[in-house]
Length: 390
Ligand SMILES: Cc1ncc(COP(=O)(O)O)c(C=O)c1O
Image (cartoon, rainbow, N blue to C red):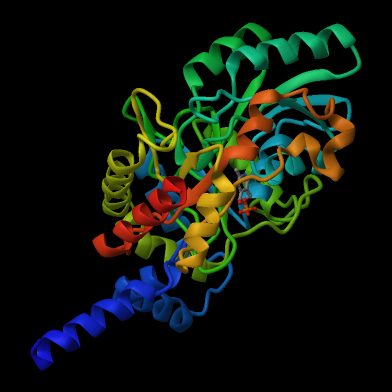
């Protein structure tokens, strides 16, 4: 072996030990650094750190991107959900239907309004809200007669849009409001309609690891109702209107100008980054579908690919094998929301939502970033295969 061959072999060996992250916001920053730094420098120079021009510019850009009529940027995805419900007067005595297999924030937002979360099961194939179970839960609540059914919050889990057509059918018959929890699905589409225009109201999170993430907390509400957007702007700013008169109780729920500027820099990369993750997802599908259940898909859907989540009865062995090779993987979510201590009182305990409970035992999210190399993807596939070959 020549000296240059052995140097190359050493470099390759070192490479095979490098950690692989589940998310890589820093790597993304380094790739987009020129755009982001220019945007950030502009804000620092103009000095309008709150309610600066970039906030409105971002809201307009997100409307163009999604086809929503109006956009109201806010402090985070949870507050987007809270404000959307408050704007409809949802509160104590109201029932809001949520999937049990989601991040706790979906149900937490309902509790923050004083309303009661009613947990529904999800579909095994997509891990998203099961419209038939939604129908059953609405009927159960109506029969009990203690709460008024008001809204449903479908979640686009892992970036895959929920089945809004079937959910709207159920909801129309029951006259409920649909507020999409699209925290994980910016960049996704269903039948060509982008997430953000699949429901009358859509709430987005810009948490750093989301498909469109800022450098801190951020969120937005997209809506087809411009009048409602006006009300949301009042709620966002201490309940004050354009003349600074407090017309109702509100909160401080603004998106920082710096975060808006960072999001503007990233927005133009959202589509190519999604495509990059989809390419990787297809690669995982091809290499893993025979040994695990691959990531959920649904017909007519372009997932945002926030996460690539496999299902396997040997999930823990796979995670150990990945961890031994310094490859990050995580379980979203280890416990369905109705079994968390803070939400047990609102559910019917273990066994009541079997699909959500089974998924919690089987899911594992693998690294899927636009920064990943072919070599890294090979290592992920090999670690999964090795875990299952023994
Ligand atoms: C499904 C879902 N809903 C709501 C939220 C809350 O968003 P944020 O963290 O921006 O408040 C998240 C964020 O993790 C989420 O994944």
